[in-house]
Image 1 (cartoon, one colour):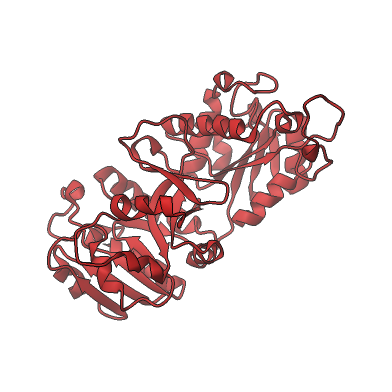
Image 2 (cartoon, one colour):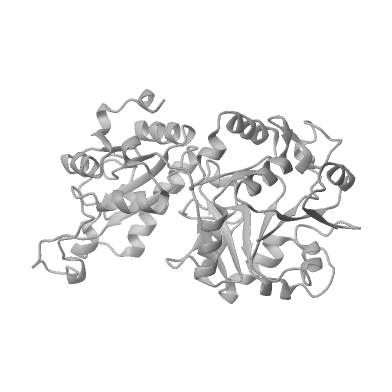
Length: 400
């Protein structure tokens, strides 16, 4: 598979670190950002790499030569204009990535998702700890992108999923480049594809961080040195914190059907933030019989969860996924939805949601925790093979 890296950035916001080299050549943890990227690709046997260079491109050429080809901008063409030069080179799906990110992602898993959905472009999206100042990508239940919220857009409650800077593209994607002109990849290309129904989002909890500001640069450097970056690759066994929702993440009010009654528990926010920093996936597993009862629609439940993700993001915390059991076995109530009135395997105290999450994210359940406020949560975690305990008994230092 071919990989194209956009390596022409000037890095004005990180010029204080080193203004004599292009941003992808900034030294981080002992070697340039680009070298970290290429090493990650080569660990996955990906060696066909093309670099798009511009500002101080000679510095990059002097460093990389083996198995690397170049496209050189004679004048700045934005983040997408130079893709015109790929039209006669690309014959299969390819990976396009920003040259200012530190990442470690299971590329084959990403590529398989792209092929299964048959879109022209698939964005890798992920939660981060600052979604309020990031562009948020909104996708439907089939992972098709339906909206793109910029930092400037007025927002309601939203799911914390932002564009990470890795893009899996089909050859036909290049047909939209008809001339050499300056273009912005997000605003001029991807956002226009939404109405064409050809843009998809691949949600991943793997490590991706841009080094576009000094603060983020030094965080990424620390994460490299402490092996946080490679440990998040889904090809490696993961560890997780599974959390119940009602009474664990938000204050218990019985069957929560009014979004205005949703209120976070401060102590749990601290646990989530700490788990994020300690490389644990944070996964919500919640029984929601309000769906089976007919008290709440899926749209209303999604809005409640969007509120949860928005409020957590404002506190610098995030969750990686939510697994929901909508079932309830008891029948015969007015307004109930009979299709959900079944004896399922996912309703806690059964372990189905945890087992599904483990399969999806390659989780080592024996190294994971299930935290909740009920006996059903504890039994579900134990049945899945987790360390289980009541949230009130859990101490943050248990994760170190």
